[in-house]
Amino acid sequence: MSEARNTLRFIDGEVSRELSGFDPTLTILDWLRLGERRMGTKEGCAEGDCGACTVVVGRLVGRRVEYRAINACIAPLASLDGRRLITVEHVKAGGNLHPVQQAMVERHGSQCGFCTPGIVMSLFALWLNESEANEERIEDALAGNLCRCTGYVPIIAAAREMFERGRAAKEAWTARSTDIAERLALLQDERRLEIVKGSRRFVAPASLDDFAKFYARHPDATILAGATDVGLWITKEMRLLDTVLHPGRITALEAVVEEEHAFVFGAMTSLADAAKPLGHMHPHLAELFRRFGGEQIRNAGTLGGNVANGSPIGDLPPALIALGATVTLRREDRRRELPLEKFFIAYRRQDRHPGEFVESVRVPKLGATSLFHASKVSKRFDEDISAVCAAFRLTLDANGHVAEARLTYGGMAATPKRAPIAEGSLVGKAWNELSAEEAALALERDFEPIDDWRASARYRMRCAQNLLQRFAVESCEAETQTRVAGPLARHHVRSAGAEASFSGGL
Ligand SMILES: Cc1cc2nc3c(=O)[nH]c(=O)nc-3n(C[C@H](O)[C@H](O)[C@H](O)COP(=O)(O)OP(=O)(O)OC[C@H]3O[C@@H](n4cnc5c(N)ncnc54)[C@H](O)[C@@H]3O)c2cc1C
Ligand code: FES
Ligand code: FES
View 1 (cartoon, rainbow, N blue to C red):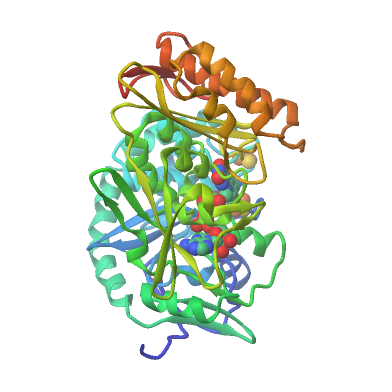
View 2: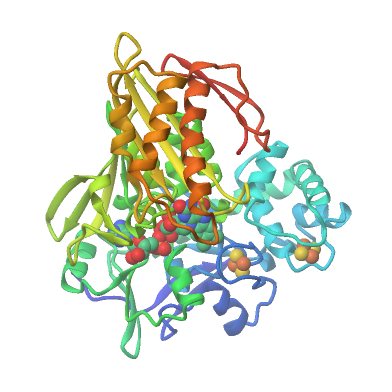
């Protein structure tokens, strides 16, 4: 491998930047505010929750630039290598407010103004990527932006208007994009990026082989993928990470391969990108992704990070385990594949050897005789962590009897976990509300959930039981409404021969 590069290279608005010698875990937000004294981007929570720090990052995908909103407060500056950063200072053009900003002014979308730059940037990303958006889509794009004084009605009104106002401005942005794509292409190289300060460093290999080699030799390095968990170790826990290893430049790790019976996701597939094929597979999965953080978190966070993090309340593992997913682990050139449920050994402990990383996750498609259900129960509808997350997959035989049951829960044990006793009680029986009730009772022998501030043990158990019964009602009585209407419109879903209906959350 050729010599490492010690200079971070990116485009800041329109300006090419080269930086070195900075703190390896400096965030984009701290660089903007403390280094550049560019105060437009605000700091509210410093943990990815409020959206005040939203910026837009452009990256080369093929020959075009793809732009996404992310939270600058938890994203390391060094992760911008080969990318374009757009902040609120960049969107105004030729002395004129951007159509998003103009609409916010005219619709009175700002009072104290603290949230406003972040809201402008989230709406700017929406404006750039889509040609129109209904109210549900606008709410979704703003789910990661908190405004505590204006209220969302005028902001949503501004969002509706920005598309109408912005046609000429959009043509100008699109025209500049070709030039930006060419400039970004010149920044892509095969050299490893190493930002070093004292004994600490940020290492971003350009190839998967180099990443694997480096990690095998430095198993104590902290892998930082989308930084939506690790970023908080830096900003909230004030951890000083010695060696940070970032796979963000390795496009091979972002590949999504569709096979006849499965999807294989590279570990660096963003949650936003994983949402497309999985959401298409079943609407409950689309709903699960929609309620995963806000859009900024789904743009930065990765599927591999959610699995490797091993949280008992991570939202994807229950659904992936129910679907029968397997994980491929790699150390240097050696790979092993194991069922995802076997990967989680104990609280925050996974079956991962030193120097071994998650390379990909294989997710089987739903068969024609399968029924599926996923539910997330949290205190808030948007941008909240689960108290209980449940996912079920049943395979029925020709007589409608359960041939295989995979009932998986998050929030009920120290790891995401299947419910073997409840599953056993279902196999061989007709799938109906009675068999679901028996299985729900058996859950009391499968789990001893904990009490914490998120939910009491009793509440968790009741939720787990009710969700299983809801699955039975939804799959056996299509017309019964089982969910309190949320922002989602009511859907009727034909899934694997059974019709289920759902709307919003609990
Ligand atoms: C505001 C906010 C809202 C959130 N909402 C949700 C939510 O609704 N549901 C939910 O489940 N989570 C949520 N999270 C948590 C987080 O977004 C997810 O866990 C996300 O999937 C982590 O992915 P990442 O790429 O950001 O991981 P990182 O933060 O980069 O890494 C997470 C962990 O995985 C390790 N790691 C990452 N990639 C690999 C790899 N390829 N191989 C081995 N180890 C690896 C890291 O070393 C670290 O230990 C939220 C976080 C925030 C800040
Ligand atoms: S400051 Fe709140 S999300 Fe970044
Ligand atoms: S305008 Fe004050 S927080 Fe939104």
